[in-house]
Amino acid sequence: MIEATRLTSRDARHQRSYDDLQRLYARYAPRYDRQFARYNDRTLAAALDAIVRPPQRVVDVACGTGLLAERIRHRWPLAALIGIDLSAAMLEQARRRLPPTDGDEHRGPLVWRLGNAEHLPVESGWADTLICTNAFHLVQDPTAALSEFRRVLGEDGTLVIVDWCADHLSMRLVVPALGLLRPQRRKVWPLERLTQALRAAGFGIVRQERFKVGPSWGLMTVVGATEGPKGRGPRAGQGRSPHDVVGSGGVAR
Image 1: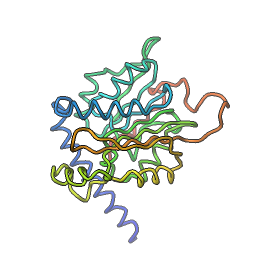
Image 2: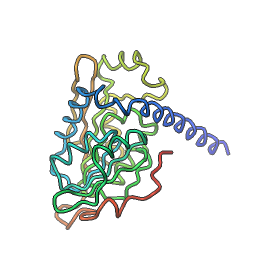
Image 3: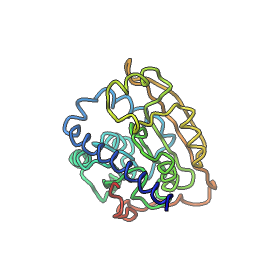
Image 4: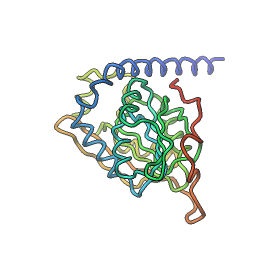
């Protein structure tokens, strides 16, 4: 009974945190692209540069207004894409930018889904590439999220995380000063801790680096890889539309 109470209390705290984020991004959504244009340009470019091979099926976790998805569509137009975000307001901006489609001979299928990193509305093994940009510090249960990332990625899959990095002195000073998040709900990690967490979740580390955007924003890129048999036929989920594999249970919790 005590353990159940702890779990319930933890889940309630997580839900309050996500409720806070939904309200925050409902306010940001109409002006987000303009307000953070330079920051987004640099961080999204870092995410794209970290993709080690042309993707076929991409999950964009915390897709926001669809800026990264738009760049993926431009660079790899035939890739199937699932964009997931916990903010309905941000997803509405994404839908305006890139309307959902079943795909054709010129464009891969695209769907948007409401959800969070701990409960991804995607079938196990569907993706060959999963990207989480500028959001991992907002995840309330990072261990659960990394487990979900591993579940969704098939054999020889690639995970790209671009996020705030506590190794930068500027981030240890700027984030609290901005008051963007309640202190107990910030999870800004150093690079080494994130790589250790990826290894514990079953990822090999392909690449890791720190970088800055302007004088204030200190970030990191970590690329992980799942392991699987080479040359043994198509990866899990190959050739399947995201419309076929996305469940309806991905509402943010």
